[in-house]
Structure formats: C-alpha cells, structure tokens
Length: 347
Image (cartoon, rainbow, N blue to C red; front, side, top):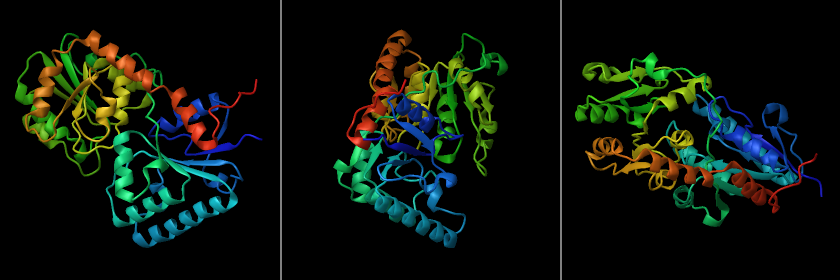
C-alpha cells in the first residue's frame, strides 16, 4: 500500500509555529507533508489526508454576503474531498474564533466536525466542551496535546533587562503576547501595583490590538511597569522569555494557551486563572493557577510565586515537557490518520 500524502492546511504560519513543528514530526515519522493552499486545492487524491487548523479563515469575510459565498464554496470543497476518498481532519485549536462566536460560526463548525473523519482536540477539557457545544460524539474527538516549543526559538542573545532598565536581581513578572481586552492586562497591572513591592518589576510586551488603549497603565505607572507595545519577533522571543522569572497570563477567557506552553518550554513557571485547559498544562508544580472569581486571586498568586522553589519548579516543568513531546503527538496522529503508528522513513 502506497503512503498517503498529508496536506497540512497550513504547513507554515507566520503567527504560530504549531503546524510547522507538527509537520516536522510527522515527516520524521515517515509521511510526506505538503502545504495546502489555493495552488494545491484539488491535488489531494484518494487515501490522502487533508488536515485543517484554523478553518474560520476559509469561510468568513468582511461582510456577510461574501461570507455566505465563501462558506458554500468551502462546504462543497469538503464534500468533494469526501466523495473523492480524501480523509479529513481538523485540529480544534479554539472552540470559537478569537473574533468571537456567531450563529454562523456554530453552523459552519458543526458542519466541519460532522464531515471530518475525526477531529483532534488539545485537552480533555476541550473535548468535553466541543462535544457538548456541537452535539458531536466524544468518540470522534481525539486528545492530542499541544507540543512544546523547546528549541523552536533561539534568540539573539539580547539583554532584555538592560534594554528596559531592569536590574538583574529584580524579580521580573512578564506578560508576553498579543494585547487584547480578553487577555486581562489591566487586571495584571492593578494586581501588581497593589503589592507595592520594591524588589519586583513587570514587563508587558506584545502588539496592541487596534482600538485598544493602554492609557490605564500611564495613569498609574510608577516606573516599575515597563511596556513594549510592539510585536515580539521570533528572533527575540527567546531573549524576552529568558529575562523573566515568571510569565503571567491573566486571561478572562481561554481554550488552550500556546503562550503557557511557550513559557514552560523555557522553564518559566506560569501564573494564570484556572480556566479551559490550563489546568492540564500548568499542572502541579509548574506554576500557580488561581480562581478567576476571586478578586484577590491574581494578586495573591503574584505574591506566592516569589516564594517558589525554582529548582523544584524546573523539575516539574521538565516532566511536563516530556508529556508534550512532538514525536509522541505525531505518532498518535498518524495512527488516527491511517491506523499505522509510523511509517519507515526512506533512507
């Protein structure tokens, strides 16, 4: 039997290394992976695999009439693949798009889950939520964790603390990632400043969403909160992470956080609310999860993190990273794709 080709949709993304790292591991396990785009639209044949990641980009547009047209074309394309004998899979990174859920998203996402052979979810929590939300049998959903980012970013060796005037002996809390209203940066600033700790600092780094103002920081900042309101490129991402003592992700809502996994990949403990799948990734000893309903939860977690035994924490993080090994994840996916755990790699 000839090997199927995996058409990864997409194979590479400028915003997320997930599909690139997954692709690399699948190829190491013996399958050929191609990037799926318009040029490859009708290339998949019988027995091949089309693996989608962020399908909302394929069925939504800037106005609803065009969304209807795109959605119909997308739906017909998936049905065409099914008729042709192509096997369809979707990794559900988020239950709903970051832009928010609509009734049309519900219709389209339920259709995708129905037409796909199987769907991958990144945690047991998400599996239960997807099954309940869309009325899909849990057996159609396969849990494959989000792999780690160890060695995915190398950095330039930049001294981030020196750049922002943060002394080497200061305990540094850091938020890193796109800054949007649901990320809870305002709550982080309030909680941090309320501690009034002379021995700590806070660095907030990331591109700010259009229309979202950080004026609330300027009004209260006493100089201990440093802000870098720009996209942190891949070349310096590791440098920023290495500068931190703790990564804080005070989200108001979350499904699975690549930012938490990124922090753990650089041996940094995570402070976050006990929401979504975070409890499955930031497990005991890897950081501090607080009750999002507790008004002092974030503040108390910040204070507690300064008392953590970092050597012990690193041991717990190392064990968690072993569970997030890409080779294990790719092997499980290939088994779901084809019933075979791995293929022999051609010499």
